[in-house]
Image (cartoon, rainbow, N blue to C red; front, side):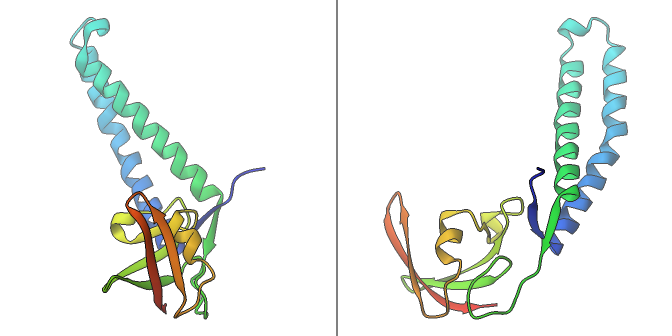
Length: 151
């Protein structure tokens, strides 16, 4: 059975854009490989090795994205009274506010405020309602958050 990937519509669009960009690089990489071959002995050709490595990375990522898009389940943010997949949640801890968008693992990017529903914070916040408190165990000790709003 194929794995289903839960992604938002915006996440699907980002992956489609990345796929187009990666596919457009194929010609440049093929040209680099051809140019590197002209340098002679391939066994000691750093340019050739570098171009082949870049080709491998790009082709692997293209394959990953195509698999994700083929098996994607689009999640819709539901306006509800509790946190679910696709929800944006405002949390308060020690007087500071943080906002997270709960997404599937494929889309997770903590630096952009997108947390996976499988991450420690994601697991703890799922199903919670405004006013509830959650506690997350971190290397520096437990951190408590209060759910302030759900969008």
